[in-house]
Length: 292
Image 1 (cartoon, one colour):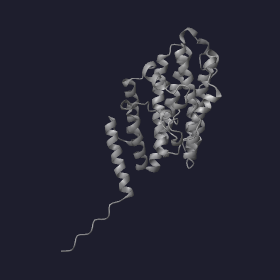
Image 2 (cartoon, rainbow, N blue to C red; image 1 turned 30 degrees about the vertical axis):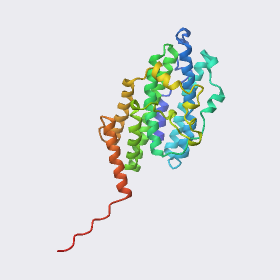
Image 3 (cartoon, rainbow, N blue to C red; image 1 turned 135 degrees about the vertical axis):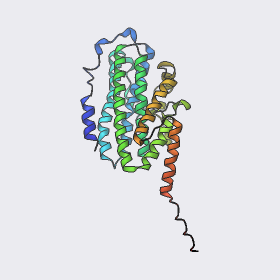
Image 4 (cartoon, rainbow, N blue to C red; image 1 turned 120 degrees about the vertical axis):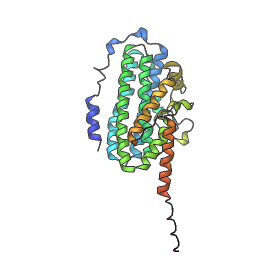
């Protein structure tokens, strides 16, 4: 069981919202309306940890260890939303999200394969770690810079925790887990080839609500994410390359392979798909040769 150890590790580095955020360094001249609006959108987006946790608990009923870890992940992710709302409450109270705006991003996600969802959220943590690093560089106001730096470190730790559960899944499910992880890895490491930002909050998760079945589509400004990434924090090909590199590196370590490119990972994905197919439909024994 991983939960007890992960609890201790994350507890030992947990930050305090009152004492570890440098609220007294706030500089109003360094916060523009444009920047403040993006903080509101990210505060609402982080609130989506609530429906994500409900999804994880539903789809992992047979894994008490992972569900117990959700208590830590959920707490820390909701704290991300809370600290950004606290920032707005102190310095831009006109932009604090309403309860109605927060309720909008709480809706049921369709059931999905647990292994693929685990990999998807691992990749999401890697991506968000880099998004927040870039956001900290883009912002000019000292307090929000410190907040994004703090959240970025949390997301990296969460990615590491998910990776531990992925390793556990490999030991339990073997090629089934390898196939699921490599399938999602190919998608999530190929963001430069897609029109949309590849993050769990930007993917369709409820067919009955389509097209308003992504977290981003239910925000007050559904188009904000692409603008934030492309025009504001300028998450360009270099930064996308950093995300892909981390995904490929961690998958390589997990699979005891080396993936220098998405193409190599895709070949491995096909190899795993064939292996699974062979397990489901084993070739019939070849007929014995007739005696001479």
